[in-house]
Image 1 (cartoon, rainbow, N blue to C red):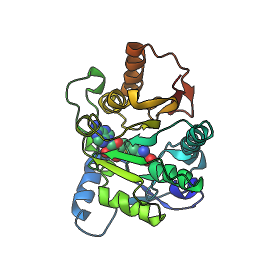
Image 2: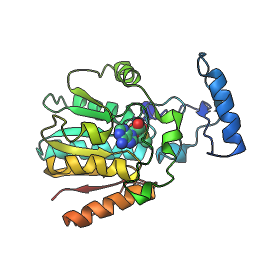
Image 3: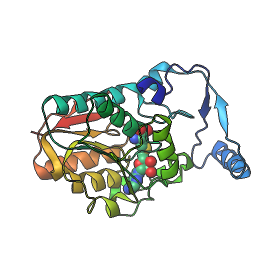
Length: 261
Ligand SMILES: C[S@@+](CC[C@H](N)C(=O)[O-])C[C@H]1O[C@@H](n2cnc3c(N)ncnc32)[C@H](O)[C@@H]1O
């Protein structure tokens, strides 16, 4: 499952084109994208699979359901199997799902263990990241919101679950900005909380409303800790405010997690 969801081992496939904001390539890329938007065409560049990048979630695969890479998917499995083994109650929640691959993987792990009493919550705007709203200095100038590839509709994500026969009543969608959906979401208990919203605001807007629902012995996983400074800052600020000293364990160059004591 992890290899298919990351398209690891699918050699010689096309890769998504990334543009640098305000660069000449970015300008050209936008022109081509706008010209092809309403046609059944995609802008890709030929590329060989970079195994190291795909293992460590360093590239954005053109057609994979997840960009987090094999190591961070293995961490999801580790966390879920650990809470199952220790009977730590609660659901799996991901704040920031993109094409849904990590949530599909979590649902697959639970299905493989025959679990029928835990849900997978898929929280996303399904229209990409918000523009910086001035609340946090760390988000100033953040460009994630101009990345069209980060906007994936909820219908597309549901189709991706169906592709693996994993869309059922145990998969619950929270559509909208985290700040609007999460404070009132009907989530009772969380065993694994996976934060993958990139920015300071998106990290803290996931953590603040959900942390107290994480069971003792449950996990908090932070996808972007090593990749986005604002994300790491949000985690440090939150842990300092709450006096959390549980060890932050690295997963790869970007992801970390801690187990709630
Ligand atoms: C890096 S992608 C997630 C990658 C995904 N976990 C995977 O397995 O590949 C970040 C996602 O977070 C969502 N997002 C970020 N900030 C958000 C916010 N404040 N509210 C709602 N969705 C947000 C974006 O729409 C995007 O789909």
